[in-house]
Amino acid sequence: MTADERVVVVGAGLGGLSAACHLAGAGHEVVVVEAGPLPGGRAGSASIDGYRFDTGPTVLTMPHLIERCFAAVGASMADHLTLRPVDPMYRACYADGSELRVRHGRDAMTEEIRRVCGPAEAESFGRFCAWLTELYELEMPRFIERNFGSPLDLARPLGPALDLVRLGGFRKLARSVGRYFDDDRLHRIFSFQAMYAGLAPYEALSIYAVITYMDTVNGVYVPEGGMHALPLALAAAAEQAGVKLRYDTRVERILLRQGTTGAVRGVRLEGGEVVPAKAVVANPDLPVAYRTLLPGLPAPRSTRRGAYSPSAAVWHVGVRGELPPGTEHHNIHFGREWEGAFRALLRDGTRMPDPSLLVSVPSLREPSMAPPGRHALYVLEPVPNLDGQVDWQDERPRLRADLEHALDRLGYPTDIEAELLVDPLDWEQRGMERGTPFALAHTFRQTGPFRPGNLERRAPGLVFTGSGTVPGVGVPMVLVSGELAAQRVAEMQAGR
Ligand SMILES: Cc1cc2nc3c(=O)[nH]c(=O)nc-3n(C[C@H](O)[C@H](O)[C@H](O)COP(=O)(O)OP(=O)(O)OC[C@H]3O[C@@H](n4cnc5c(N)ncnc54)[C@H](O)[C@@H]3O)c2cc1C
Image 1 (cartoon, helix red, strand yellow):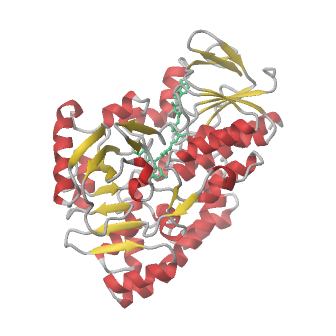
Image 2 (cartoon, helix red, strand yellow):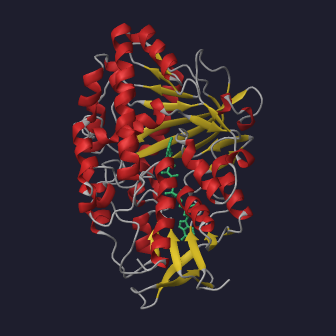
Image 3 (cartoon, helix red, strand yellow):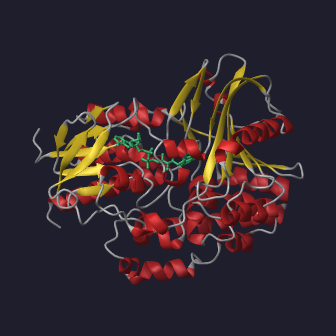
């Protein structure tokens, strides 16, 4: 291999792995350099006292984007990874004691809404899905799976932008959902997904309803073996296609011809080894990549001045005892508070009063994640990032006590045999700007052509992938970001 042919991918997160697959598929020689011992990055895993915890994403959607990574390297997903539908996708538990199960399939979900919320609401569900589908089919090719040259591209051609207006994409999400449903429980279950984009449902634009499409309409899946099976499978397929993966190897600098600017010439590893390359695809959190790997090259302004998503406190617990009756894989326990809780989190930078919690129980479907008769629980509370008001060193014992109390109150076993608590200081220590694993929030001004771009024009050959760049946060988006990064390298090769 020569430097003229090689592309170095820094980081084997899902963005880096997707980029590696699509680059290898396009015929490049690819070397992935990963600081950690395994692939996955934020989609990581931890083994503690006989329990195995998936430490990142739990809600997996849009399997066709995963299939595209395998197909890029001439492999089939079936040879590497088995995905199973999670049905019900969520058990929503409300403060009044009622429960709603979000079901796979329109008929099953319509029936569930009829049972819990009545026939009028059930009748609206079909129209709601039709709206979500239209929005998704418009946005995905035109605004998401696309590299932008400039903000003007949003209106080139004009037709799709006008269609987005016609579909109400620029109305507030909460209002749009409210046009279909009266029941507050449905408002919550069909709009909480705005949180995945770092926004409150009453502030988010309806363009982000595509996230609701991704789970509610398109379905939630889980890999056999747990979530970490996904990066392991992608890495295996990439390796079989000739991609070289170097683990436990940290990149110290991305090397540019004129020091702090100019064309890419490779990377320098910790220890001094230089790996020459014609292009470098950088997967670390984008602002951190600029600060640590590209000193002297200022990061885009939005990374310094922008609004970052809230963070998440995640408590992984291995417990002995019976689960409460009706427990599903994903259980959302909504607090009584809604708008007030978001205001505390997003405006005041404090913990939510009466927070809504996600309790996932991956060991229900994957018994290998816990010793016999035990369960692995994943308890997530949205919390402020490090721009907020919380002193996390001080708060940490209180947070743990609150989460234990909440588990107990909700009927989950609290005979704890293993645990791991991750708070914003931990995310920061793992290389995530402002202590959030969810990057810049998806406000309109931090989305599409307004998000830090994947092409660094001051350093030809330097491309970004992952949640800090386009299209954004979440497994589906970072898989797309890998494809977009590979397209940028192809354009560079073609001299465009
Ligand atoms: C708690 C949590 C819950 C989530 N829930 C969901 C969910 O339910 N559904 C969903 O779709 N998404 C979810 N997400 C978001 C999703 O997991 C992320 O958006 C995605 O995994 C980010 O991938 P990435 O490739 O951008 O970054 P990363 O996974 O962070 O990858 C970056 C990689 O670069 C490596 N690296 C960094 N610096 C260097 C260096 N100098 N040299 C070499 N390697 C380096 C890192 O070790 C890492 O492996 C969740 C995330 C978290 C943390």
